[in-house]
Amino acid sequence: MDFFFLLDYRASDTFAEIFWDLPLDADPACSYILVKDGAEVGRSSHTHYSLENLTPDTEYNIEVRILYPATPSKLERCEILGTIRLKTKKSKKKIDITASPYNAAGDGTTLNTKRIQRALDDCDEDSFIYIPKGTFLTGALNVHSDSEIYLEEGALLQGTEDPKDYLPKIKSRFEGHEMDCYKSLLNLGELDHSSGYNCKNVFIHGKGSIMGGGAALAKAIAKVEGERLKDYIASLGDKIKEYEKPETIASRFRGRLINMSNCQNIWIHGLTLGFAPSWNLHFIYSDSIVTDHCIIKSEGVWNGDGWDPDSSTNSTLYSCEFYTEDDSVAIKSGKNPEGNIINRPTKHIRVFDSICHFGHGLCIGSEMSGGVEDVRLWDCDMGPTWSGIEIKATKKRGGYVKNILVRAITASHIQMHSVGYNDDGEGSKVPPQLSDCRFERMHLLGRYLDNNAGKNEWHNCPSILLCGFDVPGYEIKNISFNDIEMEKPAEGIEDIHTEYCKDISFENMTIV
Image 1: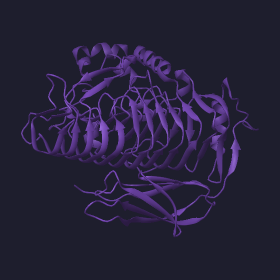
Image 2 (image 1 turned 45 degrees about the vertical axis):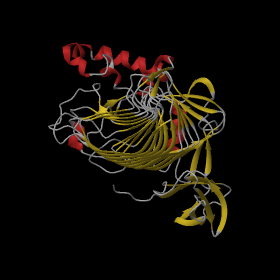
Image 3 (image 1 turned 90 degrees about the horizontal axis):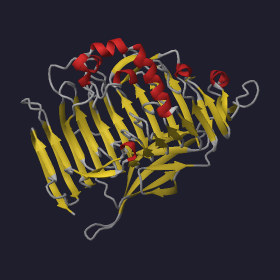
Image 4 (image 1 turned 60 degrees about the vertical axis):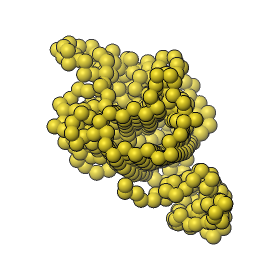
């Protein structure tokens, strides 16, 4: 399994976030020492560290060390993991959206779209948008390269519930299809799978909140689009069974909370985000998207995913909390046949030190026709979830998922399997390849939480479910499980269930 060690940072003018991969030989007792310009500045039990009170426009030499504790057979030892040169940003001029000439009103009723957009248009690399305490109602906003948005504590950027406030439609991608969708609340970049990055270096942060129009907006868009497409939907006849449910087609036109297309180097930090009409943070054909110390919510929103890398690379999420109605993290790369043709994989994704309070956990797929590889997940609690850790596809998808490493996780269960929903579209000539995954030091509950419509009902299930494809050569293969604790299964429930699998290894599996 290919592996490279990630050590990276993001910096403002006065603080920085440093993050790194969990070393392959690290155990739960290891800790980390941060050294700045030769002097220790702190220690962490997690693989990230916050540096504060830095000087603007200044370089620092940062060294990250790992401390291995003493054992009966070994002495305590400290080793250098890596060194980076960190540079803070220059101080910027504040553009207050409530000041003249913008005069945005934080009263929760005034529509501020044009006023805030004017401020965003005026923002350059030497200034930042400041949103003070208050509720600022707005429709869709466009964010360009080299922008910074800061939301003060108590500030709420609130999306409206009116579909007309998210027009005209823009080219986007939803559930694997490139299509014209309603705008998102924040829109970064322009979608073009044959081109490079056209929106770069954006920083969205603070102590405030960004909230979408939620279920009300979602239903309003579906109603408008359902009426527009009623003859086409009726013409499908029995083929409608290939869709998740009848309103799927009309609902695919919904926007997101923050849509990033062909973007690079976007940092989203410290905010409470949520209640998009569909997915919340969705990035397509993008690179180097970092999200940390955020809370993401979507209770009551169908398809309320939290963080969705889609044919994107080198992106990281950590120290986040999820209260999502659907997948907390959903890693995608397009859907048959379009995803196979465009053929842009998602790879080099890191998710760690995060909590799913409910929802569907971390999923890869089901739209994975362009391929998914090199995903690292560690130090997370995904116990009270529907899906736990799930790698899913349909037999029609094609593509592949490989080189997945999951460690130090509590989860409801692990699933690698075919699903029968969201199955429209011309099929690939071959099934997907699901292979080369490692699961280590995990605690599995053997039950999952159904919180749909507020049920909060627990159901028993196998701790590990592996169901490959019934085509020779397309079995699930080369999967290893090491140091896995499984809670005692309920009566009549298998702890491990496998079908159409090859080269599956189990080591140090225990029932607790």
